[in-house]
Image 1 (tube, rainbow, N blue to C red):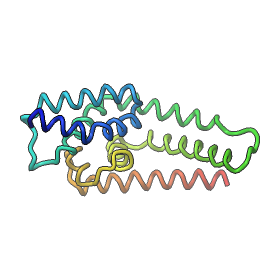
Image 2: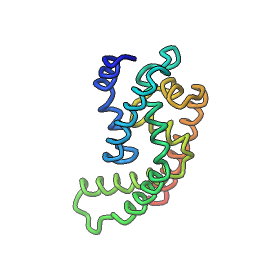
Image 3: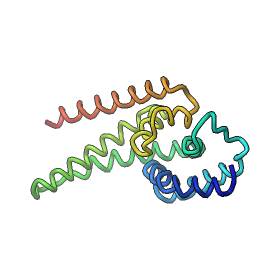
Length: 173
């Protein structure tokens, strides 16, 4: 990979990578992780094998590896978010817009709690689809696991999320 290739990779994917990482760990940490990911890609450019993964998948693989160093912090942040969302219930009814906003906040907190309880492998696969827009085959290259494993992780994560949110919604009805 040449400097020109790296510049093109940066121009094409840095913003989306930052967006994905920021949703996982916040914008300040995402700034550092994006910089670290591109630095690692440059330093290890001789290890890139185009037959194994696309440049985007390789970049996200490097970033995901770096992100795993922050899993404990992410776990604590999601738990705190879940606790705070439960406290953010509106006192008065200010109309449909306020109710929808409150419901969305509660649902987001419930989703965060479920995300925090997922195995890190399932959470990584789910968020790489939802927030990074990667396909199962790209996630396979990112996580260095077979596509069937990615599909299984996605199925389990989606099922747990759907079940938990349905149960909580039924309890509030």
